[in-house]
Image: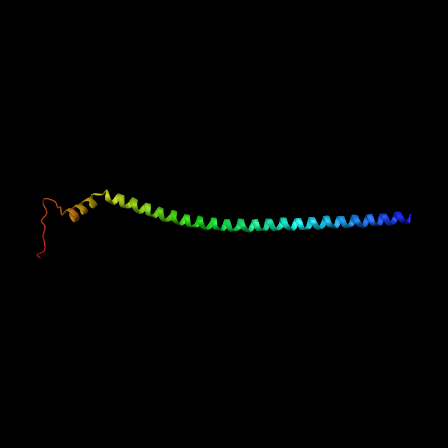
Length: 107
């Protein structure tokens, strides 16, 4: 009987050691998984911050290009006007209306 108790006690001790090993292994595994998740989260946050910065820059460029487009639209409208055509004809081609008198400075 005493021999059985000793064997049972050794078996119980081995089972406890085995459970402790399993628990340690599970704890190490959980910590490793936690570290992997933490590293991934930090990496995703860095990528997200970079993407936000790029989006901000692209929005600034878009706004700048929209302003440029509006300026070009205004310029196109001005170029199509009679006043602009008259101005260019006078300045670049030295043209005038038939009933106008031109005074030239003496040089």
